[in-house]
Amino acid sequence: MKTKYRAPLLITFLFFVISLLLLPSSPAWSGTNIRITVKTILASEKGNSVDPGLNDIVRELQSLFRYSSYKFLGEKGLSLSLNSKGVVSLPEQVTMNISSMGIEGDRAVLDIEILRGGSRIIQTVIKLRNNSSINIGGPEYKGGNLLFNIFASF
Amino acid sequence: MLKVKANNEIICGTEIISRFMDNELHGDDLITVEKHIDSCESCRKRLDIYSKIGSGLNSFINAEASLQGQEIVEGVISRIRQKGNWLQGFKELVLSRRTFIPAGVALSIALASLIFLNNPAPAGPSAIISSLSGTGSLTIVVTPETRQTILWVNENG
Image (cartoon, rainbow over all chains, first blue to last red; front, side, top):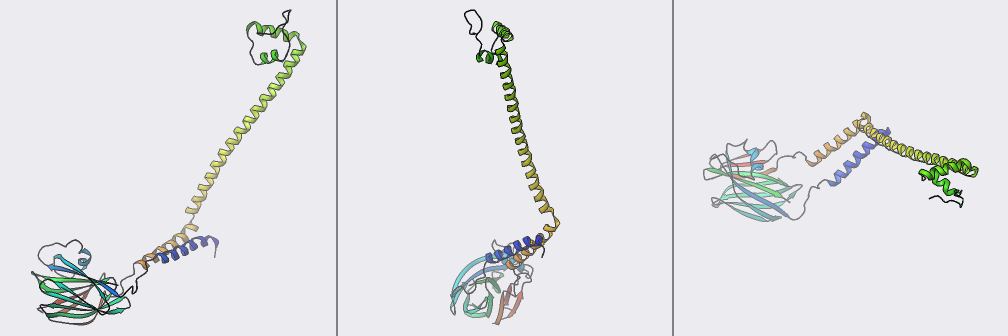
């Protein structure tokens, strides 16, 4: 190798190594709790507005659904230890039960059940990636539909 | 005032010659001293010696001053040349294609690696549905860009 190429290559190598050291390490299982945030959104065809803070969630939904308005109704946080259950009370006698069933790699295994007045609307087991969310929607409310954004991190 | 003898002749000595050479004598005193030097051999010799010493000293001072000035000028020129060389070297380093191209390529690879490592593409959908049951119709959608999983329930479906 010629001398003139040594300096830039050495600088690049050092730069690369230092950058790798400075990269934020992806958290593995950092404890026994899974932190869950449930945002409740009312999607409807009345109006044409998106509440502040929903843009990241709604941006892609607008190309998939016919709704023109997305209104933020509320937010609730849960911290679930393994094999524990949390309950989120939602509008129109809708209740969401979330149970943590474990961690598989970078995903939290969650059992989610949505009830209306005690009757089950949906029950699902999902593997939700760390620092990601799933949107579950459909229950009717005030001329629109409720949309639940469930975010998990651990 | 000139020092004079009783017979009104001036007293010879270094003081008279020094004052004469330093142009400190005027009027009658100057004329008197000039006449005395013309007639006094020892004073002429003394004046001759002092003149030679004076001219030699002036030559030495001028030469020294000239040398110092030359050194200053040379120093300034040297500084300018050094600065010029540094700039020239920097320009050659930056503008030289031989150094610039591999350094640029290496830097691009490093930056691309950093961007890729910091923003990896989402691996699969945000949520994988393991089991699902419910009333009405159920729809599963994954958004194309951020790979968000959407689960939609149509209670009347």
